[in-house]
Image (cartoon, rainbow, N blue to C red):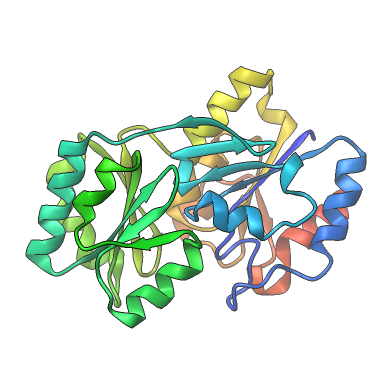
Length: 259
């Protein structure tokens, strides 16, 4: 095993969004053995980087669900969405009252000041800019993801409105309240495939942990694929192994057993 790829919400983090006790020490032990940790998340790079002080310079961050990938604090690539495609997404959002975040290489952007929405958004995007109009973001950044929010059930309430865009966008429910939209074919799995080609990685070099549909392709790219006990059935059906739930520090328990 040379690489560990791990989702954050619902996988590594517990339901209170906390890292499991003992995880930094475990990372240190694995790093001594030459193992590289990678985080695959819908969260922003800056948000992820701040969560692993002392380790971030050695880690891979597949942020924004595969849209931007960093290694050793260097941006390897950005999967930009065409402006006209983003504008179509924004039009549907405004017609239906959905709240959207435009995720760029430098920051995330919102125009809605609804406090519930902003509080949830700030959990995932530490670099967040409030603008008068989201179209302003095109002038100052490269947009690689649109995250659309629904307070009740994002997959049920949002996804049907965007079926007509499935040929242009990779549309994935990333959490109960969020649907993420990237350029077609962009996901955590395609990012790992690029890393495999770049660094000569074999699927049996990799272990991955996930719980939700935005982890699907990532888990398929890694031979040692672990579904969390709290994972949805679609994820459990494709994984070779099972880990205890995120609230039972499942990732740490599996990695300790392997160690």
